[in-house]
Image (cartoon, rainbow, N blue to C red; front, top):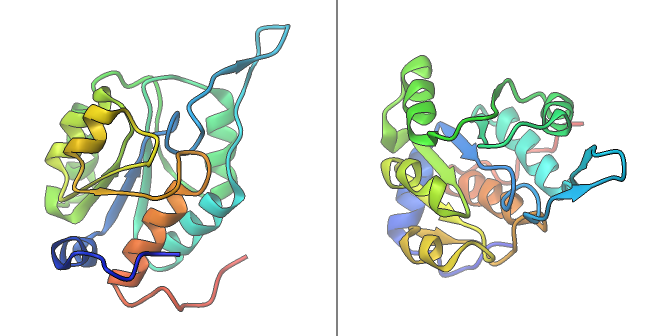
Amino acid sequence: MLPTDLPADILQRAARIKLAVFDVDGVLTDGRLWYAADGSELKAFHAHDGAGMKRLAAAGIEIAVITARSSHIVSVRMAELGIVHVYQGRADKLACFEHLLKALQLEPADACYTGDDVVDLPAMQRAGLSIAPANAHPYVRERALWRTRMAGGNGAAREVCDLLLAAQGKLDLPATP
C-alpha cells in the first residue's frame, strides 16, 4: 500500500514515466547470493513484484532490468514476466541506460530507475525519478528522490509499480493473468 502523503513532486515525476528500470540484486531480490554445492546460483523473486511489473506492462509502461551480474535465473524470470529489455553483465549501467533511452526514443525524465547500490547511482541521477528500496545502501538511499517502505526482494518493486500506476490514474485497472 502506498503512503497517502506522497510529495507532489514525486507524483508529478511518476505521472510522466514511460520506462521503469530495475536493478536485480537488492531490488528484485533481497541482495543475497545463494550458491548450491554444484556451484549453481539461486535467487528468490517475490510474486508481488512480478504481478506489479505485469500490471505496469499492461498499462503501457516499458520495463527493463539492468544488472552488473549475469544469471540464467534472471533470464528465466524475466521471460516469465514478458520483459524483453534485459541487460545482464553491465558494469556501466549509465551507458546501458543511455542506450536504452535512445533505442526507445525517450528522454531521461520519462524514465524511473530503481537501484540499491553505488553502481546504480549514475543512472539513477540521470533518470527523471530515482528510487531506492528500504534496504539500499545508505549512500544511495540519501540520494534517491523516493524510498520504498519495503525492502528489495520483499515487495519494493511492487511499491514502485503501484506508485507509477497511481500517479498515472491506472492503479485500479484490472490485473492481467
